[in-house]
Image (tube, rainbow, N blue to C red; front, side, top):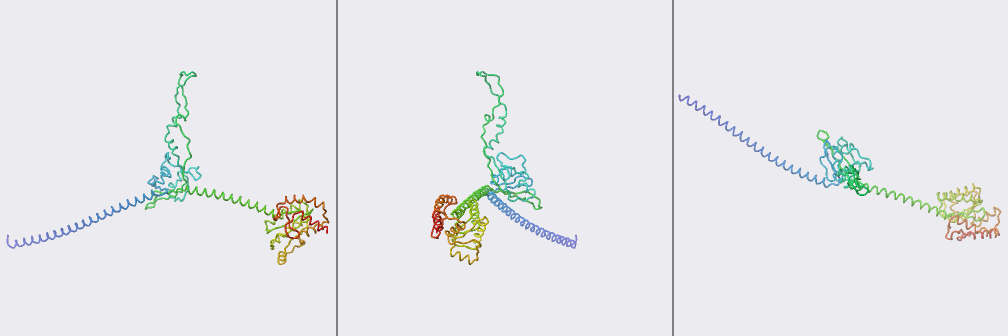
Length: 448
């Protein structure tokens, strides 16, 4: 090989070596980059793994808190999936309802210790299709539905777990039968009463709770229903308090009604006592009025006075207003209606005992008594009435009327003054005076 060829070969090899070195450097750089990428991936993987571990720990912690909160809640919480299978319930829900009422997919009925749902009347069963969770699975939102959950007693549960007792009691039992003298005879079938086969106590009343239930569907990201959640709240105490409050309200209403009736009777009795109707003479009645005369009392006075006029066939009525301290247009209107009613029955009316202040007020108010005459006092009113009737009392008539006057006063009511049941107003206006004194005073006046 010539020197020139050797140099060319060396140059080619040198170039080849340089190319290989470049490739090696490129591979080394790529390897370093891949190593760095792997390192970054490993770091990210470690970070993600640590983050995932932290997330899992946080989820477990939150799940523990959530479970603790659920277990501590007084309200029952239950969750079912889209097929109605029970996913979760807290102890309160289990205590309130047991298992079957929460598992809306169960078709085998309740177990011996499970509750039965009723309407609040505690008698009408709650349809399974209307269970709040079943309605929530259909997309409905249930809010504060009231129902009654009845749970059987422990004794009922024990009896329900022993079906063999009932079956045994229904089977005929072979028992040896003896003759009249104790000899054995052909065995025969003897039906033993169930109480001897399996003693059973009378079942007590089933216990239960009044519940208010709210339920709503759970939806996925696509909007489809993935399950339902329900919250059960024990409303038994609230129901009891409401019933107690209603009972107390009824008692209060009855008490108030009885009190109002008693007050009305007392008021009527007081009105009768404070407004006696006295028969001063044949055909002459006296009506002393004390206190305020309102519409109610005016109607009562009018009714009693008109009845007395008809019953006694009286022709003269003396209205004594000595006990009326204040008079206004309304009171005067009541008096005018009373006097007109008396005149419609054919009796004449006199008013007496008008105080100076009352007279001044009547003048200022322009109150006109019309045809009704006013007398200075009761004595003058009685004398005018007897003179108009053409009667002149005698001693025998006065003594004969003494007992009748007392009996009439007792029948009319109690005394309207502190003087006793026979008290009336002194004709001179000085104080109470009984009927006999009034009659003697009238005899004295008429004799003069």
